[in-house]
Structures are given as structure tokens and as C-alpha cells.
Length: 210
Image (cartoon, rainbow, N blue to C red; front, side):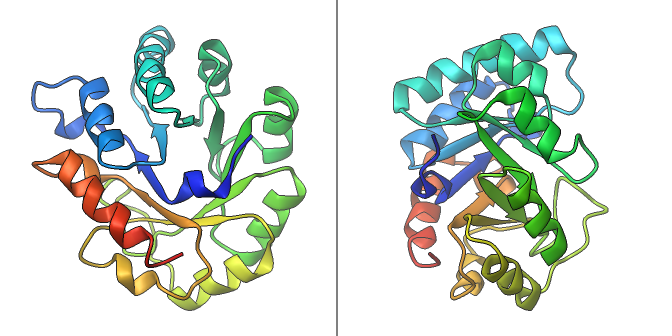
């Protein structure tokens, strides 16, 4: 089961910045720096390759005692016995996802409005991801979310919420006082020249926003 502390520094993978390294190596560096949860996100990979990669990543996250969340793919989550799955508003309805993964796995849901947040909570979500708070390097069409709306979302539900979207060491302290459990970070970790050091710095900063 998920503890809210796992959401403090939520690292979301992106293989665009591997530069010859394996994704498992980059995930390990993030974990060594203090990442508290890992989301494996692969939009282009076929199912067989995704499962192989997820198993490799899970060996690393298991070694650190950190939950592995699979983005979108319930089949991959179940195949590798991952800790849970995260779905967006355009993916399968959260209640159906909960039925498929059972009561014990973690279910994260993207929520961009108060109504979406309340619906996700009612459908069995364990946490919400809300944004894009500072735009997004991975989703060019992501609309920015005001801090006022983010605060309303966190106040509307009694499950933890993480901010996502362009969060990095230079802007994360702008999220203080919004009721967040942490931040989900992509390029702020994995695009950095020293992933471990970037995660260490972000871990320190995340403690100041929760």
C-alpha cells in the first residue's frame, strides 16, 4: 500500500536523455539521490519490450524499497507485479482500472480540475497528479495550471496530490503552501548531467513544499 511519503520526490522516466546509458542506470542514480517513487513511462515501446524493461527497472526499485508505477499500461503493471499504475483523463476510467488492478495496488490519476479530482477519489484513486504547473517538456500541448487552481484541487480531496509539469530546482519553491504531498519530475532529474546530484537537491527542496 502507498504511503504519502513515497510521493515526495516522484521521478518520471524519459529515455530521450539516456546518451548511451541504460534506463536502469539512470533510475538507480535517481534513487541514490533520494527519489521516493518511480514512474516508468514508455509511450512508443511495444508490449514485449516494455515488459522486459519494466522487469529490469523493478529489480532496481525493489533493491531500494521504492514503489514502481507504470504509466497507462495496466497489462504491463500486472505482468511485472509493479506497485501500481497511473492513468490520465484520456485513458481508461479510474474505476475500471481499480477493478482490474485490485484493492492493494496503487492507483494514480491525473486531475486538472476540482471535479476530476473528486471523481478520481470516488473511483478509488490513491493519489492525484495535477498540472502542468510550469508547462511541460514532455507534453507540448499541456496547458499551464494556476497555483490557485492547484490549491483548490488539493483542498477538495483527502488523498495526496503531487504537482507535475516543468517542475525543477529553479521553480519548485513556488509550490510552497499549496497543500502538496510532493512533486513529479521528469527533465528536472533525467535531463540533468548529474542525475544523482539533481535528485539530491530536489529531495531537499521537496521537503520545503510539503
